[in-house]
Image 1 (cartoon, one colour):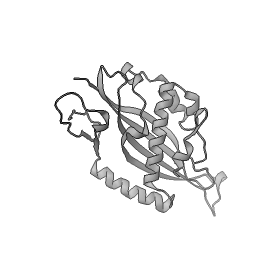
Image 2 (cartoon, one colour):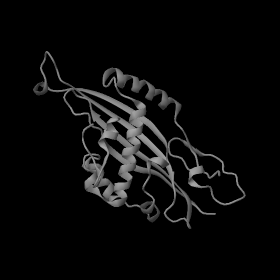
Image 3 (tube, one colour):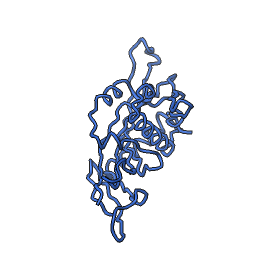
Length: 228
């Protein structure tokens, strides 16, 4: 089971975050390309289940990520599974959207840093965004690792010795999660497209718990398609 999944568990009190380990509608783009598949019918709007999102990453960034994942497995974590991480990241992001919508900030402790929580609490959402923030795992269509950053810092003398210096290892993985959902107001909108950005951080230093923490989180693309 993914480290991120194990960190987002369901209990009788909604979510408890254990630190055990972590148509063709035109769609605007961010730094990549998003396409929707055509919808052909006698008229009207496509059902959300028929709207398919296709993500085309930057090829140079994709190649660089392949190299960084290989470095991550070689130098940090030989058991790292990209697919398991994606499943866990998807679950974590969906959980965050639900808790933000419910304004259950206390349940986000440990999954998000305090700095991220403070920023989200101050975010000025539009009315449409407030009612359509939640993205469920079943509606996620794209989970993309967008950037991987590995860092090794040689600690000062109090953390190690000249014979055996302490190397602190850090990993940051930027994840893009894209999905569609049924609108809150079906009379106004036919479909909602959500694109979330999350940065997952983990310290791989020897002796540290295998915990992933979200150090950056934002809704970076929101599109509410008007009903015809």
